Image (cartoon, rainbow, N blue to C red):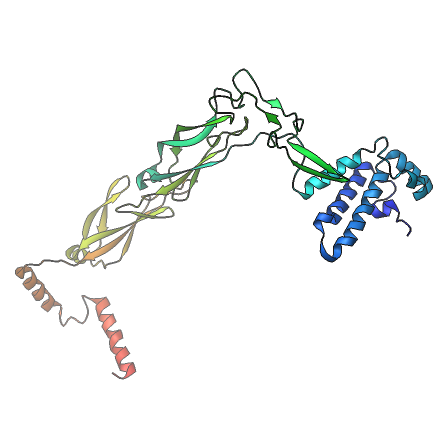
Length: 376
C-alpha cells in the first residue's frame, strides 16, 4: 500500500512552520491515541495514530524534511528506523506533552500554592447591623511558620532540588515509543526535598494557631452579607500567598422590630378607647422615641409610616422607613361595673344604621345578599 503524503496526514501545507507541525500533531495524537479509543474504532485509530507519528517524526527533523521534500518517501524510508537527527529530538518532547495532556499531567517545577479561604459566621444584633460596629473575632487557622519562614527546612538550611526528578516534580516512564508522566515519588510533586525539617512545623512550613482580628462592620448589613478580609485566610504552602477570610453575617431576631430590605416593621397595640377617640402614642425606634398620632376611629391593622426611621442601605441610597401596624386590643378581666358600662354603651349603638360601625354593617349586608342568593 502506498503511503499518504506526510503534509496531508498532518493537515498542513508545505510551508508550515515547526509550531504549526507541532500543533497539528498534538491535535491528531490526542484524537487517535489508543488509550482514548476502544471497540470498533480502536484498530483504525491506532493506524492513524502511527501514521501521524511517522509524519511528524520526519517533518520535525530539518534534514529528513529536506530529503522528503526533494525525493518523497524514497528519501526517508531508509532512515526511518534510526533515531532523530539534528533537531529531531522534538518528537520525544511533543509526545511527552501529548501524553501528559491525556492523563492530566504537565511537566515543570512545582509551584507554591495559595492558602485556603476561610469562613467565619458572625451573629449581630439588629441594632449593631443597622448602626455598624467593630467586633473582635478569634479564628483558628494555619499560619506561616516563623521559625523557618515557611520553607519547612530547619533554620539555617533550605530545601534541596529533588535528585529523582531534577526539580520538575514529575518523572517520565518510557516503554517503547510510549511515554508516561507521573508525580515524582520522592518529592511528591514538590520538586524539592527537605533533609533536615524544621522542628516547629515538622517540614510543613505552616503551624496551626488562633488569631484575633478586628472586623469593621459597615452600617446597614443584613443576613447573608459577607465581609472579606484579604490575606487573613490560611497561609499558603511553601511560602505561597495566604487565602482570604470571609465573615458571613447573620442578624439575630429582634423582640420588637423585623426588617424587610431597608424598612423596619413593628406591631403597636392600642386600646379600644384610643382607637375610637384618637390620641398620641409613644413608639420606639432604633435611635430614640417618637410620638405617633392616632386619628379618631382608627381600625385594627392600619399601617402608619414614620419616614427616615428605617435602615441606611449598606451600598448607599435613601434611608428606609419604620412602618407601625396598630392592633386594637380587646380588654380582658373586666369587672362587673366595666361590663355593665359596655352593655349600656352597646345599647346606645343599636338602631344607628351602622353609622358607628361601617365595616360591620357592610359585612352584614353582604352576608344577607349571599343567603338570599343561595335560597336560605
